[in-house]
Each structure stands twice: as C-alpha cells, then as structure tokens.
Length: 211
Length: 319
View 1 (cartoon, rainbow over the protein chains, first blue to last red):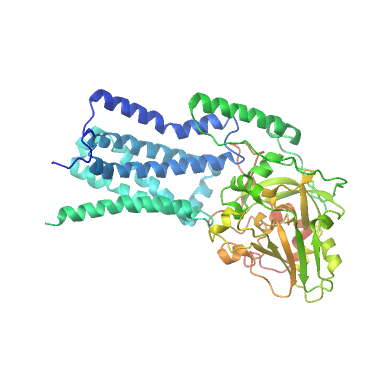
View 2: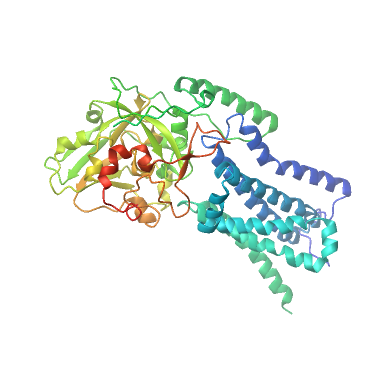
C-alpha cells in the first residue's frame, strides 16, 4: 500500500541493527520508573508517604504505557515510520508489567494480603472493580503476545482478541477518574488523549469504508 | 482522661526532630549522586524557608499523647491545603506566598462582645503544647506537636449568647497568592464549622505553632483549628473569621460531595468512606514500607473525652 510520506528522510523501515538498538534503548527507558522506586525506597527519596508514591507511580505508568501502545498505529500512519509497529509489543508488555506492580502494591503494601478485605473492596468499591477488570483484560493479551501464539490463534482471531485493549484502556481511565478525591485535572488529561487515539481509529475506519 | 499507649515503634523507624536537618543534607547529597549517576529525576527536596519565629513559654499538657511525634519535615512536606494545589507537595512548594502579616481574626455573630483580634494579641494567649494524633480522611495519620490555646478561651472573651448553636470558621482567600483557587475544586473561601459543644471542648485547639516554632505556612499559618477526634479536613487552616451562629452551616466538603463527607466527620473505623475503608490507617514515617496498616481507633482514640458529645446519635447517619 502506497502512502504519502510527510518527510522524505523518514525511514519506513529500520535496518536490523538500528532496530535492535532502538529496542534495547526503549527497554532500558521503560525500566526508568521502576528504577526510581527501587533506588528511591532505601534512600528515602519517595516522599513522606512512599507507599502512595509507589502505588501512584506504577498506576500512572501503566496508563501512560497503554496510551503509548495505542498511539503506535496513528503515529505510524502520520509519519510513515512503519518500524514503530515493531516496538508495540514491548510497550504493551511493559504496560502489563507495571499493572502487575500496581496490583502487587495494592495487595501487599495496601492490604497486606488480606484476602477478605481485597474481595470486599473489589465487590464494594466501583473504582477498584473497574481497575481489577482492566487488569483481568490485560492478562490474555500478555499471554498471547508471542509470535507462536499469533500463529497458533491465526491472525484474525488474534486481532479480534487484542481489540480488548480499547476496553481496558477505557476502564483504566475510569479507574483513575473515580479514585481521585476532587481535582479531576489529571484523569481528564488521560481521558482526552484516549479519546483522541480512539477517535482517530474511528475516523480512519469510517474513511476506509466510504467509497 | 489521658490515653496512654505503649510505644510500639522500632527505634530505627524514628526520626527525631534534631536529626531531620542532618538527614535532609544526606538526602540532598544522595539525590545529587543518584541524579548525576543515573540521570534520574527523583523530586527536589531543597526547601527555601527562612528560620521561623521561636515560641517562648510553652507549657506541656496532659492532653498530649505519649506517642512519638512525626518529624518536622514529614509534617511540613505532606499537606492537604487545596488553595495551593491538590498535590501533597504543593503547599510546601507554593504556600511561601501566603501573606500572614498583617493578620486579624474577626469574631462575631451570636456573641455579646464581638471583637477583632490582631494576630499579635492572639499570640499573647498562654500557649501550651498539644501532641495530638491526626487522622486524614484519606487513610493516613501522623502525630503532631501543636502549640496553641483552647478555642474556649477565645470564646470566653466574646461571650456567646444562648443562640450560638454552631461555630463557623472562614479561612483566608488570597487569589493572587493561591494558585489552587483558580480551579473550582472546592468553594472558596474554605469554610468549616463545629457544633458549639464540640467547639468549646477542651481538646479543641487554636494552633499558632508547631514544634515550638510559629506555624509553617503550609500548615495553616498564622492560626488554625485543630480538632483531633475528627478527620483532618475539619481542622481549618489560616482562619480569618470565627462566627457564632444559630443554624448548622454547610461545610466546604459537604457542598462538594455530601454523600462522602458529612458535617460531623468524626474518625470512625465502622463507617467507611464510600470509596475506601476507614478501618485501618497508615502512620506515616513510622510504619515501614512492608508493615501492615494499623487499626483506626474510634474518635481517633479520644473516645473517653468526646464520646459523650454524641450519646444517642446514629453515627452512621450523622457521619
């Protein structure tokens, strides 16, 4: 498929060497938020309420990485940098990784493995219910992220399953929106970015269908 | 009656007041090293505060808890003062702009002798140290050595009439100095209120100091309310007007979300916030990262002194 390239210099594909380096760089970058917590905790750099810092940081990065994953396709279409698609799996898996840390911080640091309290929370508190739902939707996507799984499932099924990312992204933003006490500025920014990313897809699908 | 609880804190988890300055230097050095080596940004801890005024002649009080107070740094770097922003670090970062002189507190309403007190006059009240537990509605707590005097003593000077059933506290509104009031997060100026018997209770304090020093701006300088058996937001900061009234006022958080925040807002482990449990709390600075949260006490542990104020009331209804 031919597509207009905004800039002649933009490479549509990277050489295997450059791509490998790009991936390595992204891998290290995505470890940054975790490194900050791991280094900061023993040095007392996480503020007066370190547990809150850990919970918020892991939650924010989960959401940011989900949105980064969702911005690959629009960015690729705008820039013609098709190699961006090669980074998407890592972004998605990192989103899952931070979601696991976020959930762990809740189960361990917040509830101290009190199973009854956790179940009560999930049932009783809508923001936790929806956050938990978002996490549950991430699990099958992470499990089926390997090349072998794509082959086993077949491309069509795989794509259908991975559309779950739209639902879980919406749940993630609602989770954030519902938990803030009063000032909704931050969740509103995430909601706006998500709306743009989903809106882009809707517009694109609509245009493709039109004769 | 004084509630004495055994000190159950590991010495290694305690940061005495005298050590915090040294630790801050260490933290700054560590921060520089980490930032330099790894290129990570971990938040700037440098504070640019001048030396606050020392308070003299402060008496000890039997109302103080024996528990280990939080460090000055913890108390002044983790605050809810929405006029300066909703992040816990915002008040410490932005409250430096709060104008605290000249300052006066207008005391009016259902009183025989309404009066405007200059801050200098208020600082002449006989001051005592009150080390109180502070439980935030968000589920964390601290132990804070306030310096102040009982609100009752101020009331005695203006002589409330029989019509005074409630006391309303209006706080400072300085839009040019308060970046947080640009957003309608709450109704400004922030308004709080107590029932008259709550206001006249000996535990209810007007605080002007913290750790023998004049109150830091982020903690509600120059004068604030402290009501230790209620969630922290009831303790209004930077008060400019105290009004004795007949009808129950609607407080700021009630106007914002009446199903979540009630007029009384007594600390109560049995009545959950709609979005989180109030059964437990994290004692900041003292409970380690991996230690479970501690149980929240009814009336924040001040039940012996205040439970009788609420005899016969359904506290799940009047939350």
